[in-house]
Image (cartoon, rainbow, N blue to C red; front, side, top):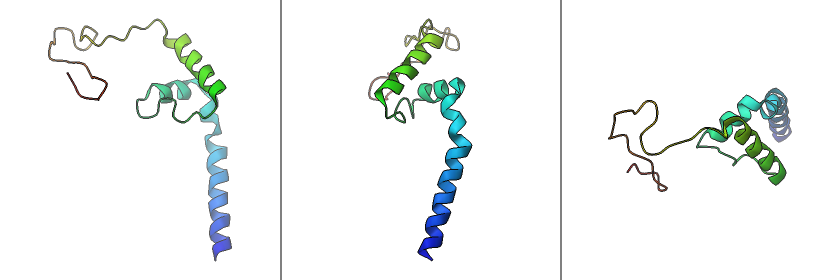
Length: 91
C-alpha cells in the first residue's frame, strides 16, 4: 500500500512539473509573479536568476513612477486614498 501511495505522489509531482515548466520561461508569468506582493522573489532560490528577473522587471517597468501620494490615476481628487506604510497599515 505504501508503495502505491509513493508512486502516485511521484507521478503527480512529475506531471505537475512537466505541465507547469513553461511558466518560469514566459516573461509575462514571471513579471506577474514578481509584481504580486504575496510572492515577489520568494520563489527564486538562485541569486543569479533573481538578478536576471529583477533586470527583466526593471527593463519593462523601469520608467514607471509609482507614487504613494494619492496623485495617480484612479485617485485623482481623492484625498482620502492614503498610502500603505511598511507595517501594512493605511496611513
